[in-house]
Image 1 (cartoon, rainbow, N blue to C red):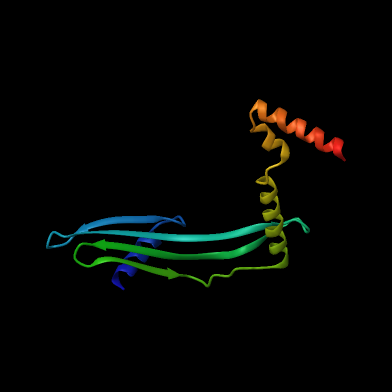
Image 2 (spheres, rainbow, N blue to C red):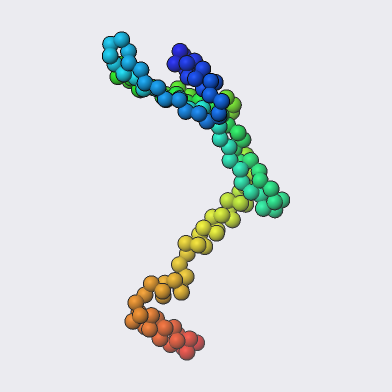
Length: 138
C-alpha cells in the first residue's frame, strides 16, 4: 500500500532501530489525518541456572506497525513482520518457571509470626496464652 511504502521510507531514513515517526496532514478538503509508524525489534531471554547461562525464550523478532486516523477514511492499522516469531520452550525453562512460581508463592504465604504482628496487643496476649495452653495439653 502507498501508506506502508511511505512509512518504510521514513523508517529507513532513520539511523536507529526502534524509531517512531509521527505525522499529520491536511487534505485538500481540509480534513486532517494523523499517522504513526513504529519500527520494532524485541527478544526475551531467561537464565538457565544448572548450566549458568542465558538462553533465548523469544528469538529476535522485528517489524513495522503503522496506524492512520483520518476523518474521511477512519482508522486503520498495518503491520509487517520481517521474520517468524520463534518461542523456545525447553525443560530448563519449565523448571525455571516452576521455581519462580514456588518462590513467589512462598513470599506471599502468611506465616504465624506475620499474622501475630498484625494483631492488637490484647489479641497477641490471647494468642500467646492459647498457644501455651495447647503446648501444655500435649
